[in-house]
Image 1 (cartoon, rainbow, N blue to C red):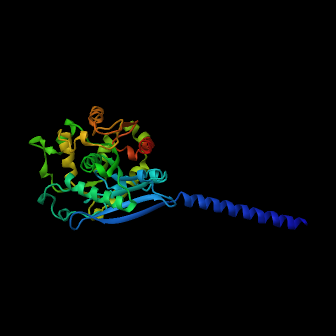
Image 2: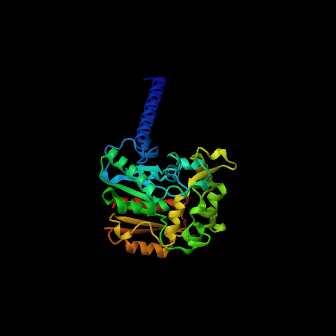
Image 3: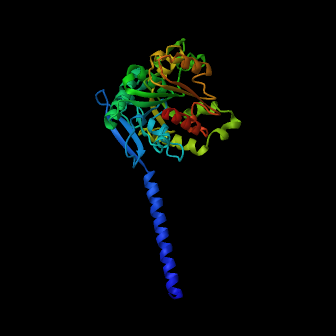
Length: 356
């Protein structure tokens, strides 16, 4: 074989090796590819349709019945934003999907891409606060039954966040036969005098302020004020990333089709959850912890103010019917740990609990 023949052979071999390597990379990427599906599911009430998003591995050979999860948001929601932010490493849905779980989230009525109550087109002061726990129970039940039917499973694991964690616990007491494991992350629980006045009647803060109106608008300032206040100024950059903050605000505003009709842009959300929030902090819990029969994990950030350390301990002790009880504390984090730099402590800790 002459020199140029040998050169040609080497080149062809190199091309073949590159092609094989490229195919292997493509196969690996395909193996780890995440499928996203979105559905509008008919609600229990006339005219209500609920937006549900699912993420899972494309090549998942079989859905393990213990590995099906529903994420339930709180305020300002919606689930499609809070649990699936389009920033690498900040989608909790993708994190669990990459590890073999079939992950779903829903937008509760009045939030995101789910039906908005017609009263949200009227003046806020013409109606009482919209979307209380009783309606939320109906929406969660629709999502759970849809998932159970789609995946042919009896039970669904539920991860609730903020008031969504309190709603999820209430749901678990009402439908124990449908709930696998329960994760209460950033739950609102326990009497809390600091927050009673926030949503209480000015003349008697023990009573909820029903005159606050059916809904409210939240712009960038309102969305960030509370979060900013929970992190010391010198720790702001250590605990969170500006790019993530901007992406979150943008995604929230993008979730409301009416946001651009106002200046500055704002999201419109129901006030009912704030009444539920007030009732909890006034000492009137939405649920009886002793009636929760699912294995349960409580998750609290180190700077969490909506559930004190003492309230978390009390809740754990009162889960007397839960066969397994766990508590997870996230260091250097707030109620918004899901969006902060220590979020992987949250993701990993919850994953370990689900895999027990």
